[in-house]
Image 1 (cartoon, rainbow, N blue to C red):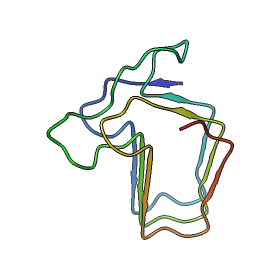
Image 2 (cartoon, rainbow, N blue to C red; image 1 turned 120 degrees about the vertical axis):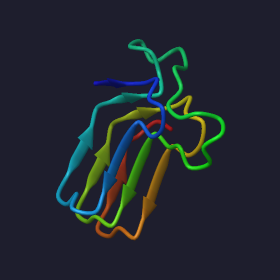
Image 3 (cartoon, one colour; image 1 turned 135 degrees about the horizontal axis):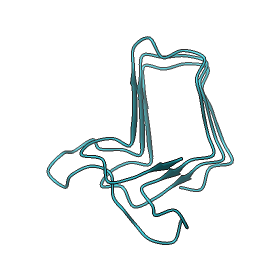
Image 4 (cartoon, one colour; image 1 turned 135 degrees about the vertical axis):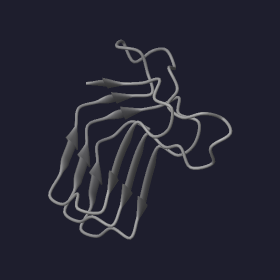
Length: 88
């Protein structure tokens, strides 16, 4: 999946997002992964490529996360996360 040019976060999971797999995405880039196509606007402080809040048992793996206005991955109040083999 190509996830780019979103007004806020590229991927946002809040509350009931448990046992998710976020795998193999290009977030904040063009389809080749070589050019930035930002997620978020400069006037929002917490625009991230992936933003998780209050969830558990999520796997974030093998993603290219780049060119976003803020953080690559933001995880708040979440547990049992596996964040591996990403290029950020």
